[in-house]
Length: 318
Image (cartoon, rainbow, N blue to C red; front, side, top):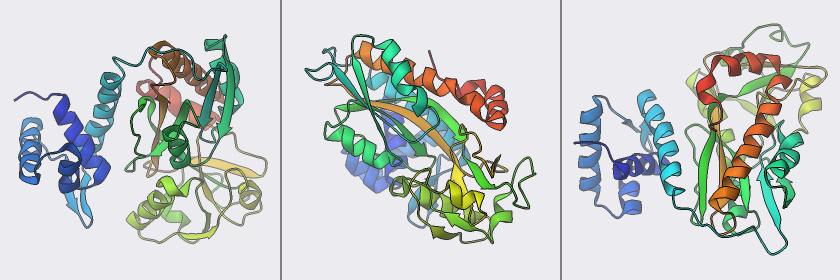
């Protein structure tokens, strides 16, 4: 047996739903048929892709790699015959959304350079779930979404997506006066007594991912503060709490930003767009603009720059 597209869709459906039964219902198959297909794929690969968990199934380390690559293949296939209709809206405005990243400072200019005959509007939103909802309801034409590994944000037709950055680590921000601020990397277990600022966009899995990572090293995080994206910086600088941050941000005054040992928090960036608003050519232009905008700010954090240079496999595709 050779792997084909339907097997990749099956694997991703199981990952999305966390259940063979729910994935079978999504794809219109019986649960026994789905289970048999999964076993045949695992036999072909030679290792398990999923293992049982309390709530259903979860991917193995190899499974996470397979799922990440399967998503890339499927997004390319799904956009192969994209809608070739003209610009978004009669006013020629491309309505972009973006999670709160360092690159928002360059998004309008970079995407505008790629689409010189269009105006670019931008909505910055810490919640990927809200951006996905805005795409679904037609309030946005395209968006750059950040998705925590192990979680997903469903996108429904006519919204399609393409991976920009398949994998990057989440860093930790703490006060410059913190006892661990001088360390090159910080072990999550060493933060067990800290107060935490809730990650922005908690409704898209970031808070659940934080709790899961902390529990895996033996503690329950004390999430004491809830602050919009960026608003928690003074709390960090004053030593009141620590928080997870996008690694491309430079460390604000009074703070230190460090990688977490073993990368317990990992995310990916995905460009999503409506096929009824953007043609293939326009979507590709948006992708190139967002890739350039992100690359513009890799140097903002020297620690992340070292990681980035050591991992060319995660750089945006041309």
